[in-house]
Image 1: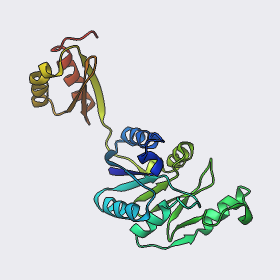
Image 2: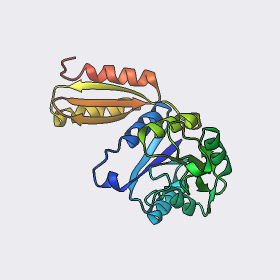
Image 3: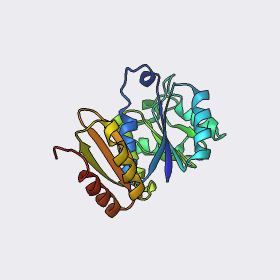
Image 4: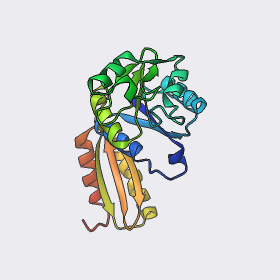
Length: 228
């Protein structure tokens, strides 16, 4: 299963808010064996949201969109998703009923709070108010991290794939000095390899075969200088 993550918000693009939602979602999806192919941040603009969501839903198994939910003037994500799928925004009866059961009367809710794309499945907000939605392969969550996390957990089982195993070998050598051994590692084992320099070089070895990862990591550890 491959997924694109779209985060929406002018505050993200201005650097005033750290995009912690994308990092958290990617970690959760990776644990479930799902491959994240894209992370894209968009402004609070209907046309941009519609264009990107429409493009990504054709290319990936699922699209997760976070941010911009609610009834205020800059909460335009639902409108963008509706436009991407050629749907109207309508007052979602199930979402309004759920909020009523939680103690919110119609007078308590700002107009537009329960407007979702026609035909969408409502995702209830256990720690907030604005509902999320699922429409075809597009999942829409709030941008508030606590709300997003709680809502994702309600649909987490809908995201699954082949688990990937990972080991990291730390080498106290320049990255350039490791190139020949990394090349030999890739030729010897069916693994993906990434090298990340810093005070030391962290060589990450990944595969869907746990035994191969273990063998490849042991092979490399025997051939690098390390404090481990």
